[in-house]
Image 1 (tube, rainbow, N blue to C red):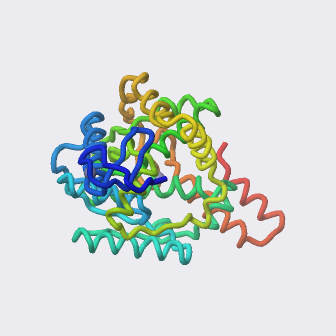
Image 2: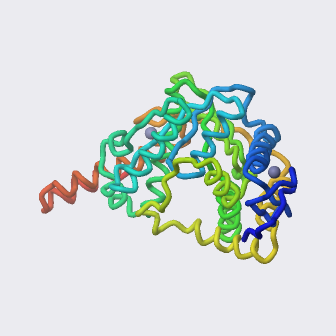
Length: 328
Ligand SMILES: [Zn+2]
Ligand SMILES: [Zn+2]
């Protein structure tokens, strides 16, 4: 990938990073300037954050979230780290340790919460009871608790490390499946919703949305970020990687396709989706929802019922009990 004797496009010194999508080559120092400018540009263009604003950064321990945290701090934001551990063995442990190492390096606070403790239930039980893919259940629960904890930590904005590959892959998936409602909602900033009980929706921002995964990888390596590498052992059912691979094939043949796909989509769209309409509150947790229960509580309630059904002795009485649990 790198030719010896390659020169940096910015400073003409020896370069060790090459990005055909921009037709540029960088040394470590100029790469950092480039990455920071891309993030600044995204923050400004999409009105993500006010200068110095307090923001909660969702930190998984992977290179993307650690790069996000580093960049937010370097750009002067008051970024607090929030790590949700899944308690799924060595991968979770490695991810937690990477997040803690980054907090120490930045001298910033990292809030750590356990998803199984927050839900009060075993994740595998919740997955089995709801007959859904692990990733989809985990994603719904993580979004729910990241939002809740962000507001509890006194911030109204949650930043995540989603980058161009994530967004371009998601866009392709939504187009292929004709998920118009998701296409309508796809934007690097989603406005929040304030509620009197303090259980509203935090604003969601994606400051890395202009950066490709390969660019962040180069940045993480050159900054020697203590990232945990590897894949979640339960990510088998996820379809996003297939769409990302498809976009990568196009990118390989036609550099710049990935950016054009996503940034062109945003450009043609013209503006953000309308802010969420105030609706009702979840009967269990108070989170905003248009239904009786929010998506996370529906999963949790189903899991509680399932555990009860498993415990209940089989027989005619058990059938009646189960029937009562259903909504009419
Ligand atoms: Zn340079
Ligand atoms: Zn709820």
